[in-house]
Length: 72
Image: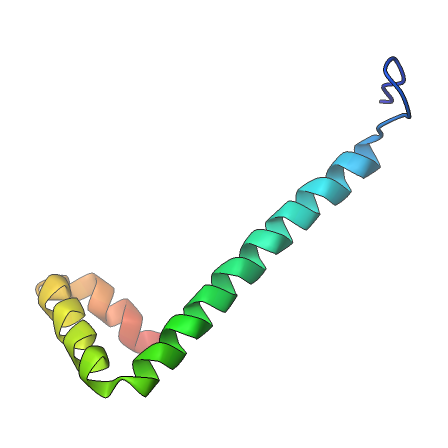
């Protein structure tokens, strides 16, 4: 399907490329943020310990989630 009414044509291939670019950009941003957070935690052991304690407190009693985490 091409739309030429207002200028150059836009094809399904163009749309697919734009959607893929947006998806990959979001993935890259997320992975970069997670890596940055891990590096900051490694540089600050006291903060990492506090974060670990909070996660353990929040996940206490969620047996299925803990099994999934340990199997990963």
